[in-house]
Length: 321
Image 1 (spheres, one colour):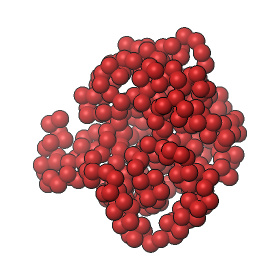
Image 2 (tube, rainbow, N blue to C red):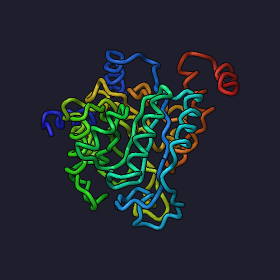
Image 3 (cartoon, one colour):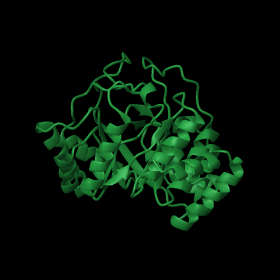
């Protein structure tokens, strides 16, 4: 990690919130079109039974969360889901499988065929499949994957408190393999797991120190899941998320900063502040992998309002889509 970036992150976290948002929004305008919010769709193509012990995850086989396990989807089903997502306005289609790592064989070949099918629909393809070696990364790139998601989750220091079945350096190694293949990197983290502000600074500084920097940075709020070690964590103050978005925007100015899991905890005003701070992507659909997500009509109303239309006009436009 670049220590000067960490020092900058710490200084940004200490700024008064409105000053921080103003700085982040100014930088956002230098690198992005205000109001350009990418709509994405995320589908769990293989659910549950993951051998990792991530403390936040209902898909971990280590915890009894009541989640129904599902086998890997067929290419035909994924194609149908991609077509439906495109009709809803998504330009990026993400697929996630509850694997520790990619393994060679029929299932990986099926995923490669899914990628080809989704790309043929004219959508950006993003996948998150766990750890990758160089050969696997190259095959995904050749099949048409535009971005690979592999979150750092939290700081190097706090990481062992959340996950012990793989190391922080394992994650960085996968990101290096992704970058070598020519795929873009989608990597961010989760707040609300008991980490400190210093951990949040460290995670963002680690991402900002990657060269090149990630093209996509998802910021997630913990969605406490019954049966997991973090089931009883208190909710995060939405303004903590806004601060994270603002610092991410300043440190990683050209990236898409994505509002990801946990938007159910944000009211309309918190969403607006997050967009003001530099967020420029959301995920559509009632479910994000296995977690609830805001209603699409609500999202359409919000985005229409941000585009400058009145509330009644926005409501009518959302209902008629």
